[in-house]
Image 1: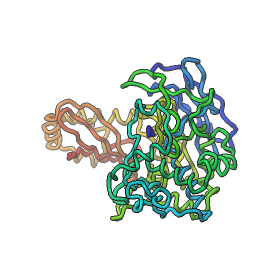
Image 2: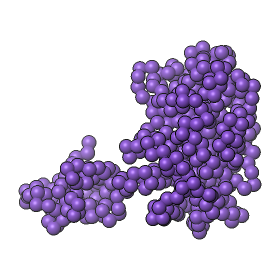
Image 3: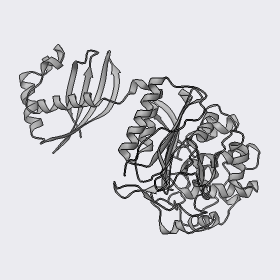
Length: 460
């Protein structure tokens, strides 16, 4: 499910923090978040960061409601969208702990009338490998979603269609899976999913803002959308009944961070359940899915992560947990149709957990572009290169550079794509786009900034 005018940005009140970031790092985060929000043109963004198993940063920037001029604060709630899925999975794992069901039970034990219910397991629902078609693939609100429905109606309509593939043979994201999973939870437990989550997770972790939405609250962030790259426009929220176990929760970033801290400490659930929740599910042929149970599995800057994003009408969200850093990054915004929260979360994580992977500076990229533009004309500034590199760029090499690169037309862009270390040097990769072709740049830099290597390589 659905996983501007710039208004004055201000980092508003921060919540009580259990630990403190160094002042220079906090300043860098403030500047990065502020500049990203200004560039994106969204009304607001709210961020929480966990490091060493403790909350170290929580700030909100921008405006929660444009018409009222109400600023966003750390107490402002945002819709979580599909981040809700990991809570649905956790609730089912708790029932498994109680011996009330098994994740390897077939759907037919609970809803025998659904398509191939005797072949689909609860685990396949929670890992998007069931084959049930997604009832909400659109990234904008459609007329049907403005009319109230029930989870029963969603399952009755969508889980009786032919499967998109044989169970376990492919991975395909489907909200239908989690509506059905939540229905199984309520049938087995005899309880409302949200009430169960409140009792077993939200209250024990003091997640006071966490609940389902709709209904909303007056102090919640207002939902906005945009058309192309236009200004934010108020938008409707989906009516009751559409979210359920697939994306119905709302809370503040700080409260979501409390769940992340419990996640890192393996609290609330049993050790076996945490293993189940975070273990990547593989297809029947052994292929990877990069997905566990309501959680994506991957890495950022060589750090393993468990993550999930969310988008519902008017909101986008990102929650990423870094187990090797005992850390997490939560980024929430009240405007959809914008690629902001995921990239911002990655940039925040790099600043906090992997400063050695800092973004390339604009100055570095500009210099690389200038060198490449000169090579296109058969020239180099030899003062920028080491003795070895100057030996490489012979007169014959420069003539070939001029002839071959000149034939590619205007140099349109140079983009940094990778950085590492080798042989006591910084190893960088760039992608250079000319009018007629894109090439790769394979570069080594010494500590004094001189280029030991500047290879232009064909990109097929």
